[in-house]
Amino acid sequence: MTASAIAQPHTPRVAAYTAPLRIGPLRAAGHGLALAGRGVTKLRKSPAMLADVILTPVVFLLMFVYLFGGAIGGGDIDAYLQTVVPGIMVMTVFQASIGIGVSLNADASTGVFDRFRSMPIARSAPLIGAVLADLVRYLVALTVLLALAFAMGYRVQTSLAALPVAIGVLLAFGLSFSWISVFLGMLVKSPGAVQGIMTILILPLTFASNVFVPSQTMPGWLQAWSNVNPVSVMSETLRGLMNGGEVIGPLLGSLAWMVGVIVVFFPLAMRSYRKNAA
Amino acid sequence: MSYAIRAEGLIKRYGDVFALNGVDLEVPAGTVVGVLGPNGAGKTTTVRILATLLRPDGGRATIGGHDVVGDPVRVRGLIGLTGQYASVDETLSAVENLVLLGRLLDLSGRQARARAMELLERFELTDAATRPIATFSGGMRRRLDLAASLIGRPRVLFLDEPTTGLDPQARNGLWDVVRGLVLDGTTVLLTTQYLEEADQLADRITVIDQGRVVAEGRPGDLKRRIGGQILHVRPTLTTDMDAVAGMLTQLTDATPDRDDNTGVMAVPTADPMLVSALVRRLDAAGITVDELGLRLPSLDEVFLAMTRQNTHSTERTPA
Image (cartoon, rainbow over all chains, first blue to last red; front, side, top):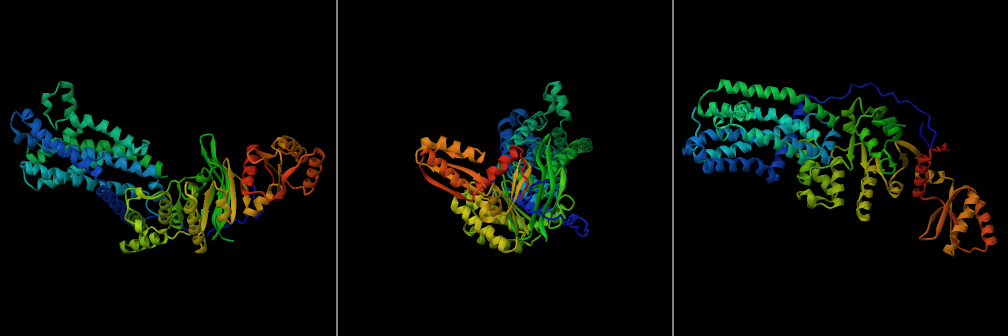
């Protein structure tokens, strides 16, 4: 017993039974949308965040096409442009997928998360919001990249209808891999640490791939990795869809990666998210 | 009597460490309770459990009759939270933050905007509505945090150390806001390390130390609780301090608190004859004093006495 200054008779108050209040999926979606709006506003307000996502691919596109393109493509810059654009699209979305873990981590460490959690909104709403805001980020980055690519002379060889399909598959790819970032974001102490770890993970995936150079030019062991690397497989899928060539094989490979990553990291991410939000 | 906040035997354990070891709390609707305690006493843990951010390992708590574990969504519909942790998004402006929170509380865009502007005006932040929050002063930041927790017109408001780090003027301003809220019928639970703050605002005070409630009552009652009054004495010559301290120890069986800077010694006592007994001894020893008297203890002294008792685990039965 604790010290109580006034002896108060203990009168148990039996509240009339009411079922716990739950938040329906429609309201949860509404909350998710409101939070996605916040993500987009933040994006607009923080040029650094946007520059990261937009400038990096732009610089890579210009640098690889005009600086290394001649050497890598054997003098045929236009052909190299056709090969490298789908690859840089994959790289762009892949790098943008770091963002979600960084922003979730920042929300958790600044107390913004606690504010949301003390409100009558769905537990999943901040996560849904972050994912939706990420989709916007991917789309903005891809739009800028493709506008530049078209200006530089890139053309979709198959049919323009293939472009939305390619982008759709790519968005699914980005969202699948973003669960790794969510998991790390909920696990690691600071937003900077999330960024650091993800960058280290992403570098071997983007460079040891067929994005910039054909796998055939690599030593055998690296070639073996590059051939199964999800970034390579996804790049091949986009090349097939946009430039023509084999689609089914790489597409199945990409889907296998997406399913694999989701099976492993979605439960892990949700577990650590709930732990943070429980 | 209807309780806005009720907690019974709250326990929170981290490994072998008990952050809370049986905390009881009863706060009638429309009143202010001050939860006092040193750092690490369990104040914030208590608030986090009551605000549904943390699950207790034992005991139960209700807000407005709704269980914090069993029906958290209803509880969240009743509460507002302002503190060291529940924060606003620094990359958004003040108005953007408040509008977002309004939208999350299912207000329409227009309603959310109107509510945001209303609160910004009430907290004198209208001029700073669209400024980056990074440029806000500490006081403005606290006012915005408070505004953010009021969007949903909470019936129960948790303020976790709301004035820590504020200058006196900003602190007074925040106190006025809290008083205004109470006039509107809001129940307020306020944690603080400042006794003055609790004394100013709270109807009742709960003192927590090492995860336990060590005292509970009205501020005045608590002051009376620790042996009635404080005898304070200041010898003319500081060289006499040791001798006087010796007399006080003999007379009261307690070691007096001594302040070597001011030369004042103080000791709690319930014996009205103590003053005359001390005067006779001083006279016999030929010691003159500049100051000698009885007064009610300050809350600081109550607080120290309460938490010290707990440390020595000499639990005192309440009156």
